[in-house]
Picture (cartoon, rainbow, N blue to C red):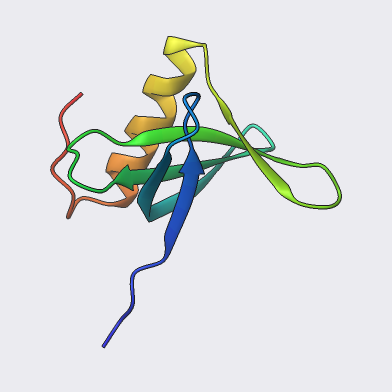
Length: 84
């Protein structure tokens, strides 16, 4: 039985959000993680920054970059049927 890899993120209000790992995409020498929060239908796309001690997950402000990463994710993962 395959176990799903999960991440727990902390929201701005301090609450925890449990997410299923979907993919890690490298684009223009940067890594982006694709996560699906529990009970949600929209994915989180976050930039992965390694600060030497641990990884940080940063929001992406550039809508064009988000679209590009999401398109790459959909190409690599046709089994997922997320909408734009």
